[in-house]
Image (cartoon, rainbow, N blue to C red; front, side, top):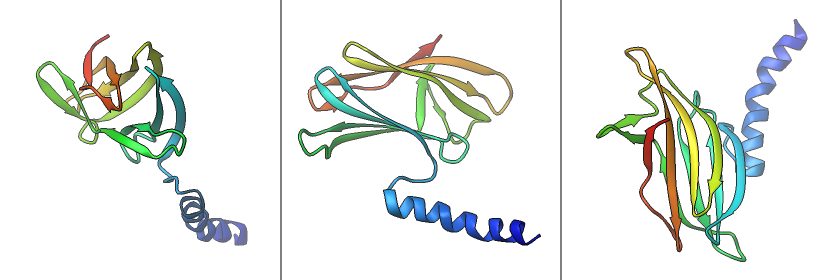
Length: 137
């Protein structure tokens, strides 16, 4: 019983300490840094159940300060915007580089039922991101 009480009391403190010590929110599940089209790009994947967003940052050299940040909260598909936060779930299946762009596959679950597997692409130009494009995979 004492162990359970200690666990319940210390868990929020340890999560808070993680965020304060590293500057990384507890919702972040993965961070990758890659070179895309000559630009250093950081890809930040969040736990989609806690914080349904994906972030992309172009970083300066040599300081690695963000030059541009793209936060994906909605996916353009079939002339509409699919909100990640207003879905029954959205899960990133894969993130990979393809020459001068970042591509990712995401399964989007509609509130009404059913899902769609989307392939999305973000072209990377000199110091900026071009518009996100998604299509059915």
